[in-house]
Length: 319
Image (cartoon, rainbow, N blue to C red; front, side, top):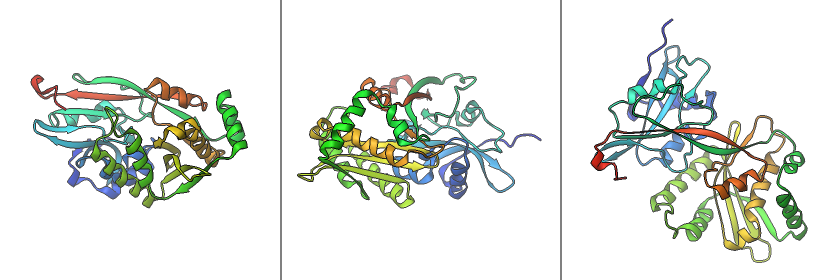
């Protein structure tokens, strides 16, 4: 039997129900590929290369292609708050090499930047004109009980957690809305060079609301018990076998009091002893942040990006 040919689909031709069915059934656990996630975070519609399933009209595999329109043509770029996408395959997929999915994109975009997921191996052959780059995130399996996981923390973290437990001057609580966390980040980080664009705060708000509606979010706040001041907050995503550390912020006082450490420890405590669950710290390219994650006993996990630029050389400086 010949494999079903892959198809390039513009956004208006994508069957959203079939799309989300494929994401849920995929061998790769990629919460970012959900249609609602892409709606919330992308500046435009998302197109895709899909492997149709003739037996039920659905999709056996998908490669999301988030699309933006520029003066010089369309671009496919990774949306904010969307670390990984890449190829998602199901058990019935007959096309399993990511290079196959790049061919239908030829001539469709002036620039493409696709961040694959960590379950996609290094492409066997990178097509001409594409650049492959390795990135990494950090993973911590949560199948063991809490005490066993905590024993894997660095000695300094274990000591600080004991001290914080004795003082009990920070309270941790779960909240529903991300407004306070977003404002905290905006206040503490918004003025930094290279900080988030204003529109990204709006996308984060949309995403957090959508995640809450889907029952996929865990939002934790750390408050000072004496003043009720918000010291730090963290937004986690719970999807299938992943707990994703998506977004966080802290005040200088919160950092000094180790509030971010407490928030992550609380999320680990609540989800420990869950077979198959992995905490994805969603980062690790900045050495200081990588050390912070590694001190929880997390290990680096590579994933890859594919980039292609076809617009004229005199426009390559523009973004």
